[in-house]
Image (cartoon, rainbow, N blue to C red):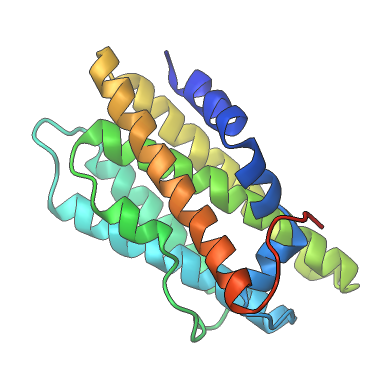
Length: 206
């Protein structure tokens, strides 16, 4: 097992969840039904700041022998930059539930696995945000979010490399896998619950 294999396995095993998290309904859920440019930007900023808060806590409470403090700090700084780039301030959206799951991990393999799950989810959102602004006839914003998506892909690759460096046993890879599963499932469960609360069936992808 390595980080690249884990990412591929997660995408295969959560294919249905990712297909729906990468749909326009996901944007509807993220923005509480307010499909406007400012709301999409605010949702992206809220997501990024929620990640930064988790990473800040991790950097202050490292796992024994964890050599990833610098990575956590770098990714937290990047997340804050992403938030500032896409919106003047985050809106009134609640912190996504996947960050509750992410915050609970303590070992380096679990934290990195959870991070990988988070990046896979957020990349689905970023792709939909690009599509939203293309459809909104706002090419400058679409290019801005293409840049965000590229940055997120590079950050995901850093997490993959860190997993390869940290995971030394089958137990480590199991911990990483279980954490990633938990984060992806939390994001998907929130997507379903949010749409159902609006009276919308989540199963049809659009």
